[in-house]
Amino acid sequence: MICLGIESTAHTFGIGIVDDKGNILANEKDSYTTESGGMIPSEASEHHVEACDKVLANALNKAKIKLQHVDLISFSQSPGLGQALRIGAFFSRSLASQLGKPIVGVNHAIAHLEIGRLRTKAKDPILLYASGANTQVIAYHNRKYRVFGETLDIGVGNFLDSFARHLGLGFPGGPKIYELSLHGKKYIPIPYVVKGMDVSFGGILTNVTRKYDSGKFSKEDLAYSIQETVFAMLVEVSERALAHTRKNELVLGGGVACNLRLKEMAKKMCGDRNAKCYIPENEFLVDNGAMIAWLGILKFKSSGPQKIEECIIKPYERTDDVDVTWYG
Ligand code: ATP
Ligand code: FE2
Image 1: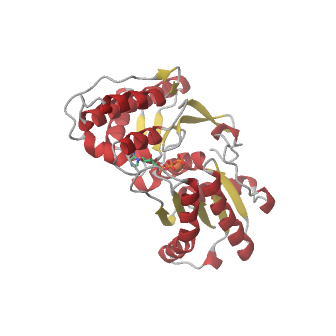
Image 2: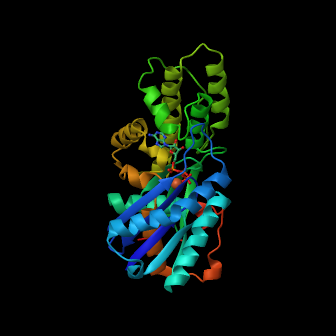
Image 3: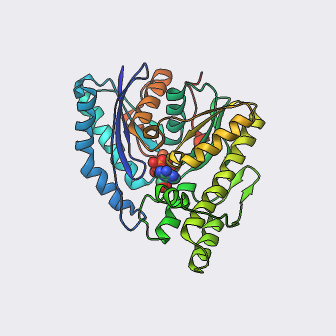
């Protein structure tokens, strides 16, 4: 079985083609970026409208197949920006009806977790899902992916992007903060905000923005201190989730997990407690179509196709709303 998966929750329009053995035949994408930073939802959706045909052609080319060879269409149904999600859902429904093939909608956060399990062979992990809009620590228990901890306000990636934008560094800001951090020489104390199992970044953003505006601190030192602080928060909550669930595998997911310092800190924590740290390749950490295609196969095989009228977007669906029928 070959599934074509369409990702469009936010800035990326991606198409992945995956077979039911887990082989990734193609994983193509095109992302909306801006010089000034930030993202305007209507521009992201316009980007997707313009990119979709080209990304589809690239993916089919890469996989060396024709559209008729596709057995299943899947798409990111939730959560995300309504205007962006709608383009992917519309495109997927059109393809499915044009080809007369079944269609399933999948949850984007769970797709990050499942592609992590596929690529790394982790069996029953905790997922640290650190992306732009989302920051969650997730694990399977009793037919649901439960959220053990999460951000109380913005995602860690949005936090990094907002600070980078304040420095005039453009979007996405995470990689630019990382580059700056390599030249940081001194740790500047900033708030460390862990509340129970949850984290919060809004107050830290205000704090570091004021520090930068005071002119007393270099942006390099601030970038370094920000990374040390917020990544320690994420790793602390992940460690407590491992201890609480008695699981011994951690998988990283989401674009922020491309950060080498976060990878290093997660590996160190796992090493210290004899757990395994699994990190998929960067192309599967960031938003991608392959993860949507793979979860489409898992969902279809366990619960069949969806009616086309059920294939509407669910921008606010939570990770723990989804019935997990395929786990094992
Ligand atoms: P989601 O819909 O899952 O919230 P997303 O739309 O934010 O995802 P992703 O591709 O998962 O998309 O993540 C993008 C985020 O990752 C951006 O905030 C970006 O700044 C951040 N990022 C990318 N590379 C790095 C890096 N090397 N270090 C830190 N952050 C990074
Ligand atoms: Fe994502």
